[in-house]
Image (tube, rainbow, N blue to C red; front, side, top):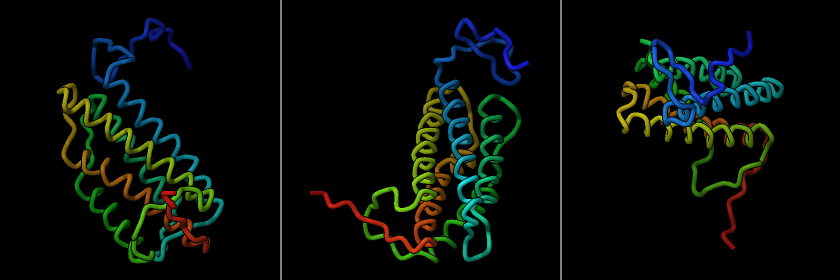
Length: 184
């Protein structure tokens, strides 16, 4: 069944919780932002698969994105009260991928205007959505509503770096020059 009618009054229920919470609560907002990130990553995965993009180490962008999506489900489960959490090796894995991509790219000397390539623009949007999800997660932790592991928080922080790296590498692989803002 795709609907239950239980949320018609503006409440929802999280995993393992007998009481309902407001859909406007910071926990519901954070869960929604994580879901939005995960959903938009599906578009990034599709686009990068279509372009057959991969890193110098041979990792396909679409496989990297799929792993991000799987990990976001773990984070959503943890936030909803399940006994799941991101392990340290997942943070290290993201850092390793970002470090490898950074070695492929010219050094960053400025900000870049998004949209050098379609795939890069999609990764830039995913990056901004993921940063919002991270901010929402910080709010629920600061409010004491949910306790997220330090590795989960680190993963959320690294996620936007990985998405930025993929956006830049997408442009680089397409031989499209990134444009700096003119500030005029």
